[in-house]
Amino acid sequence: MKSLPLIVKTFVGFLWLVAMATPASAAPDLVPILTAPQNGAFGVRNAGTTAAAPTLLLVGCNTSGSGPICPIVPPDLRATYSHPAFPYHALVIRVPALQPGERFDHQVLFWNQRCWPAGTYRIPVQADGANSESENDEANNHDQSTFVSQRNCPPPPANQGTNKPDLRPILPTPPYGIVVVLNIGRVLTGPTRMMVSCRKEGGGNCPTAFGNPNYGVVVMVPGLRPDERFTYQLPFWNKLCWKAGSYQISVKVDSGGVELESNEANNEAVSTLVVTVNTVGVTTPFGNKICVSVPQLPQPNKPGGATPVPGKPATSVVPAVPQPVKGK
Image 1 (tube, rainbow, N blue to C red):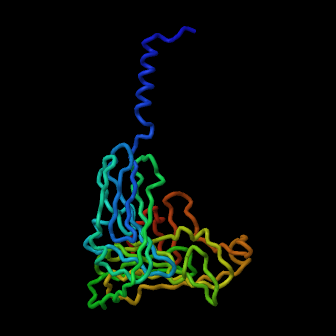
Image 2 (image 1 turned 90 degrees about the vertical axis):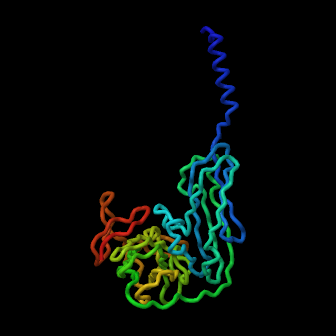
Image 3 (image 1 turned 135 degrees about the vertical axis):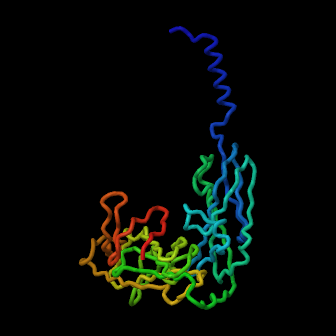
């Protein structure tokens, strides 16, 4: 076989030199910046070798154990700190394009103006929250900070009149992992939080997914217009393992107390689930105990099908980013 012509060898060598001079990992690398303890200052640094386009910084808020509910964004700033694709995050911060080595810093102005009830708070963040950038290191997008508040926050003032929103939860009986929130008031609500908790009657524990019975699971509810409903399927419900007994599933809407409603007395609903081993569902081993998978709602036969709520008209299956569904 004849050797390659000199000009071909020269061109191949040139390409090799170019490849060696250009790092194979040339890409942005977005790293979140936090303060400890957290004081409302958030940032993102581009530690990569190329520029990054505008991205989103997602900020969460969780409390440990039976801690309080995190405050949420004031109504006049919800458009600034929210994003329809990420309704479950406490804050969404828009990050501009960043050159290599450039840093973006943002101070949340209302951070110290909100009343944080006494407790310990965890503040997790994620740079490039929408995963829109292909980065050198995708594993360093996450970080977390904490702070402790010792404040005693006053209860919200009593409502006067009826020209206000009115949030009311609906729980099927027995519960099937679906929760519905209705706005039966006369005006639009902002995003709120809903707490779903579980307590076993007579003592004992609920499935661990519910956490502490005094805290439970927090679900972000989008703003609802009058007569709109929000339907939510607990994503972990089908995987829960229940021991025999009677369980109270409780829901509290507007658990952070941020909406001044025409009726504050209808924010809670309770449904009872009775589990009897070997008569309901399928028994499965769980450690040294026998647990039961409770009945589930019928699953749709095809994408876009309906999952009915017992006693209620069928509504669309909740998508990855839940949207309010019109109806009473």
